[in-house]
Structures are given as structure tokens and as C-alpha cells.
Length: 89
Image 1 (cartoon, rainbow, N blue to C red):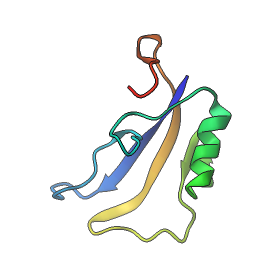
Image 2: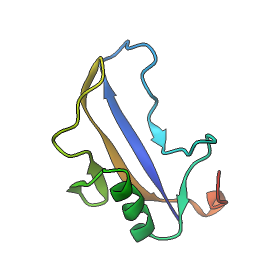
Image 3: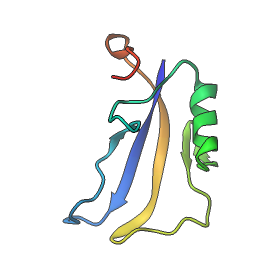
């Protein structure tokens, strides 16, 4: 089982900046995927297509930064721990 970790890049002290952590669905639950390929396809479906390294992706060069954001977010596909493999955790 795999999940996608998101790392945001905002200047220190920015109010309401998104927190780093697992990608969550519309219900606030962590998205879990059975295979790496499913996780990659999910990223491609939401236009996160630029492969940075290993299992890390980001938006293509046309991404516009938000206020106080200094770099595009990184999305890394990671393996879940055996204790945390319930769908929707």
C-alpha cells in the first residue's frame, strides 16, 4: 500500500500556509493506493506530471506560486507502514 506525501514551501511565519503531510481526499482522509502505478496515475490525472527524482513529482513549469510561496510543492509516493494500511486512514 502507498500514499502520497506533500511538501509545501512557504516563507516562515506565513499565516494559513498548508501543512506538510499526506495527500488527503475531500473528506480529510489520507488517500491510499494499492500500487505505485495507481498513485502515479492519480498524480497525472491532477496534472502533477513533472518527475523530479525517484518517486517525487511536481507541477510543470507553468505553475503560479501562491502568496508567500517560494517554490512548487513536491509530491512523493511513499510506502505505508504495515500498521497503517486501512483505506481512508
